[in-house]
Length: 266
Image (cartoon, rainbow, N blue to C red):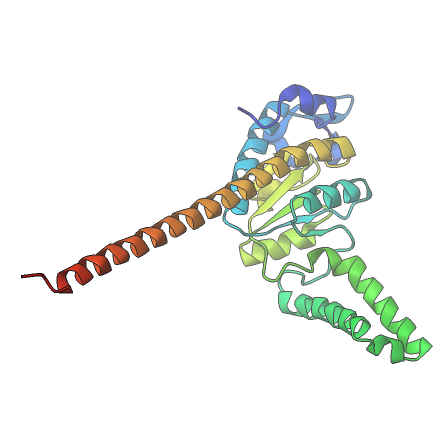
């Protein structure tokens, strides 16, 4: 069963592309027709592509790896932050920090700096600073939180990138391509799908369109996380059961040995 359907996508306006003069010819396979100078996206293909992307995302989540969501355009920020937070995945909704992936060690240093400032506050050192120094540190902390707070838990490179508007986030896509990190993207008719591993052809400007596609993908990721949790519980239960069986076998062996060594009455 598909994770979304034609009518849901149609109602959300996922079919509206850009003006014909702004199109990228590489998107031709996903365009159904042109109407009043605007390209209309083939939603039947979108349904198929959403399912493909969702299944791949589910498997990544099930493996315990992280998916980094990227959306710095105004109409996508809040919905991406909400959806990514609901499944405990990192996200970037402010300016993409250059080298976020290709220079990941430097980004981690900046995150650690934020943690160090928090330590200063916790141990009382911050209170001993002058007003001017305290203000500078507070501003630095606020800036770091704004740009990197949502990736503070990302201790290693993500297993995948989910991008809303691959044209706007082309630097992020380029970095992921360079490192061989798969890219999942909502791709509109003005964008190049060639650098995206899992293309989801759809309107990337309307918040409803973005939300309905994210809902399907996030639901799949959540399924992967739940399956991982269930497998871990089963493994722990099996381990405990095996441990009990070993202990029981050892006890039976000890009892048999003790019985064999016990003196017999003549």
